[in-house]
Amino acid sequence: MYQMIQGTAMLAAQTGWREWKSMDALFFLIALPIVFLYGICIGSFLNVVIIRLPRGESLIKRSSHCMTCGAKIRIRDLVPVFSWLFLRGQCHSCGEKISVRYPIGETLNGVLYVINFIVFGGINPGCFVNFLLMCIFTSLLVCIGWIDWDTFDMYDILSILIALLAIPSHFLTENNISVKDRLIGAACISIPFLLIGELVGVYIKKKTGEKVRGIELGDTILMACAGLYLGWRAMLPAAFIGILLAAIFGLIIKRITGESKFAFGPYLCMGLWIGAMFGEELTNWYLNRMFPPEETVSFYSSLIWF
Ligand SMILES: [Zn+2]
Image 1 (tube, rainbow, N blue to C red):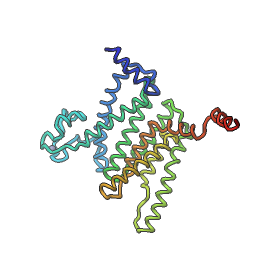
Image 2 (image 1 turned 180 degrees about the horizontal axis):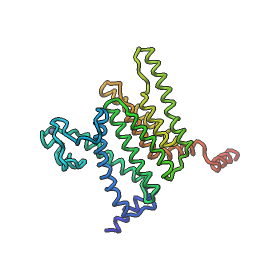
Image 3 (image 1 turned 30 degrees about the vertical axis):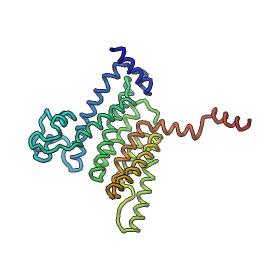
Image 4 (image 1 turned 45 degrees about the horizontal axis):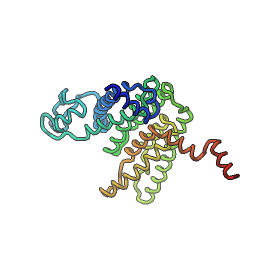
């Protein structure tokens, strides 16, 4: 049996990358379910943040309660995902439906943590800190994106928390993002966003007299803060993917609902998460293709001469 498990884990290690190669089979098998459970528990708190922050309610005071009848939620009904399934999505007291967004938010956070662990997790302390920071980053993105989806509003305090992650990321983890990379990262997307937002705003005001920005300041601040944490190598593909997703989903939403107003934040958040995961590799791959290393160049030039 253990042989089989070991074999499966080795296969995962070979197909995976980074720290997987040095990972022990048993560690791999024990860690993933724990990471998932940890993720859904944090996801449960994120649901509270997403609902209460826009209403200005305290995040820690007052225990969870039914939205309809106000009944306090029992301790045994607080288990993420499982309680919702056990209650078949209904309040124990009044039988009113409990929104499916709660288990979705919890599961989403759990799944993202598992992917974070597969990409960044490892036995050595530097890897572990990096993984924890990525989890905080992921959860902040879930909150920012979801709140923007709900309310068309961004809470800059959440973006600033992302910027603060740059400090432990710089001193406690092993990465090759220099201070210069971080500063360029902070500016490379936020400044174009600021300018485009301003210009489009002026254009709209001229045309319709409405006072709106092309790109909200909240989105701009988010991109500046995330740039400090990720550096420019991850930021460029992150912004590209975010804008692409926004364009695609924006068109789909307009097709279905006829509504042209839509929140930019959720897509930027998706782009940032994908950028944090694979952005550096994407940029390096692209740069290598555009500006091949010496040997390749001389190989091609020798072909031409030949
Ligand atoms: Zn109720």
